[in-house]
Image (cartoon, rainbow over all chains, first blue to last red; front, top):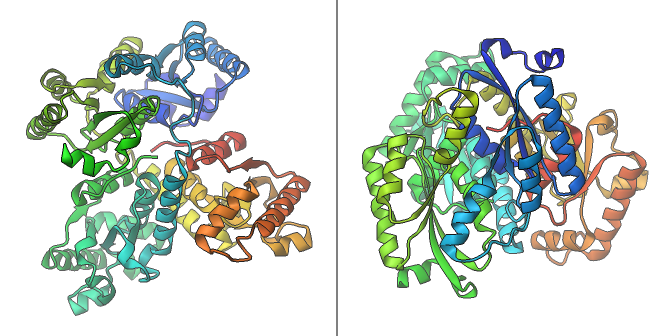
Length: 288
Length: 288
């Protein structure tokens, strides 16, 4: 048990514990996301998570079953296993041999889909998160390159090609949101800081004014902004609450005057901010 | 029907069609990923996908049901609906009122989990992809900032803080993989190009030699590299097949000599490359 205690230093705050596996013949990202969206509903539990991707041979399946059964014995209780193994036989083998509660994504949903579509599924592994086709691949790469090049107002070249341009004060979440929009949804995203210079002028920077139809504002509560800026430049005038209040107020006024849509990022994750931007602009998302 | 034909220009290549909804009271990212991993198993179908996030009020639920039923009527066949709505009542309402095959992630998996853990789930929306806690938030932001700052060998400052340093020839996938590792898994990732200068010296660049234990190599087939480079600089010596062959061969020799683990990115998606790096380095992933 020492091993577990060492691995999970915060364990003492949670009364219950359980080992969880995410198993996939590909990346395991789908199984993890699905599993985590369930597990967060059980707050009193401390879950020790293990992801095993690329389980795509008989040996690897046997090895995974061995690992699960070892931990079942060590823990004195069976682990929870989320699997997204496409191969029928391998998945069935895990379900029957692993001493675990096995929640099998494919088993549950493929049958009703086959009945509905009146067609057998191809049961081929690795189609999701694979390179679907060269066109999609290049579009995604182009979005990532574009977004990298247009971070923080670095260049105004080709700004007309941006699908959305995020604006807001320094450290309100523009960069992570831009990168997420590009990587996850293939959206060419630029971002541009609003700075005290713009507040003196009381208008948008000249280089983005002509693209007003594609601007989207991020804002944040001054107290939270101070925390984030303190982390970066402790005790600076830049991070002071007074300055954060001033910048946020002026930026919000500017965006309101210019009728730029706005989202408050204070309590939102990157995923939530990015989804809000997509949803409100009506941009078409691609999931890779 | 005209509307649909216009919206899906490649429809003629697929014999069957179906409208698919992804519905969530939060971002819908989990429902999309799960749904897409199923749908790619039905290659002969053309799916017209619609994601509706933030369905978190009675009015929005009613509106979604209306949209589904309108498309059921328009298409002459019921849509497929993947939902990850946490709220029991809302989810039940969609299942009973929407004219659709509704595949409800929570309905299927929460009950067996509750039985296994002998506890009721909190049925609270939006815990996944939310800001779990401030510590995690800052760690993720730090990983993103670090990775941005250490793209393409831009700086060697703080390189000792990198959890992994990707190396490889220009355009083999270092930047997107680095960004994905940071955003999706919270890994501080640097990347460093291997260039013809290094091949003349036949050794690693001085600035990364001391971090050899954290290097991970990306490689790629020369023919594929040429395609990617052609897209960027058409008809350049840089993009020529001859040069691509030379660089890839020399880079692989260098990495083999230095015993740097290596993955071939040619047919892999960003998700697969990133997962491979994690899996083989044993770095701990966090899913946000």
